[in-house]
Length: 143
Image (cartoon, rainbow, N blue to C red; front, side):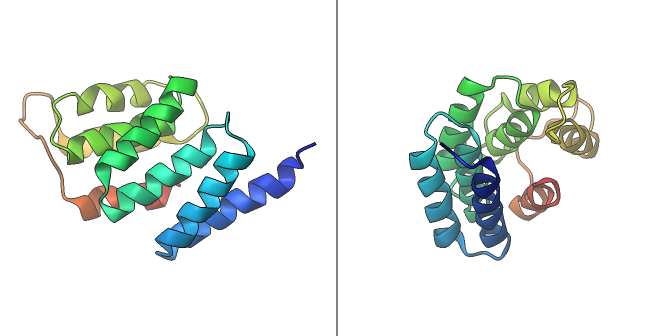
């Protein structure tokens, strides 16, 4: 039997460590949670945020794809995925942000995506990347 409160607290420790830039420790926490509950999305999401903050966008993208395979409409994962695609210079970044911006879940991605899209501007303005510091700052505010 899994004590959900303990799992939630361990997850919060991982996020705390990430915010304190203790990336290796945060990854170990999220990897342990993944082994403990392999069918859940949050350990992958935690790892994705760590990798994104480190600038390891290929790993972040992989982890976010795992989350979205389980929960295709997870607004926060969609918004983060759009940011990672933007950082990688991929042209498909806007689709994920638009999906997150129109979501109705309570996971925080809608607000984040709308803010990012309003900053980037209308579709007509070509934009394939943004400064890492600005997008990572948004990840910190919403996670």
